[in-house]
Length: 169
Image 1 (cartoon, rainbow, N blue to C red):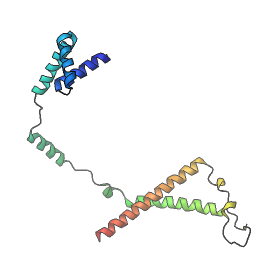
Image 2 (cartoon, rainbow, N blue to C red; image 1 turned 180 degrees about the vertical axis):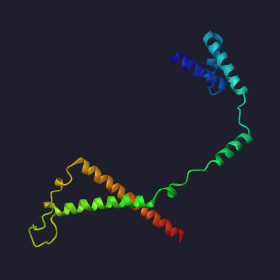
Image 3 (spheres, rainbow, N blue to C red; image 1 turned 90 degrees about the vertical axis):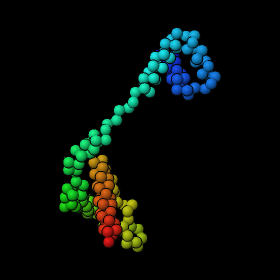
Image 4 (spheres, rainbow, N blue to C red; image 1 turned 180 degrees about the horizontal axis):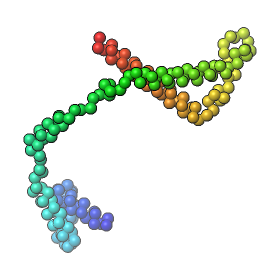
């Protein structure tokens, strides 16, 4: 099968004239001496002539115009801005912001504020807080990550709308 493929490939190169001169004489000798090569060459030459003899059919210009007129009859779907209710988007954003604030309030309520660090510093000692108590569940971690991404997307959308308003002015 590989030999047959190589023979066909070399014959196509020979017919198309993409073969070097030294190899060209070798292929022409093979065509004259070997019956398999000669039969395959005639077959490929007929196919080559057939392909080049036929013209490509193109639709008429009127057909193209008819198709475009038919497409124009149908109403194109409106942009998403016109059919997405902004109040729903803001409600979803408010829900996620409330959820994040709730997690933060719960986390800070679990901190022992009466414990002081060694020294006179009044700052919170973050090393004494055990965060594994809050974020040891995989679902909580995934949920927080999704909330963070959605919050950033909401912020990006808000800033983009503000930027668009500034460009209009």
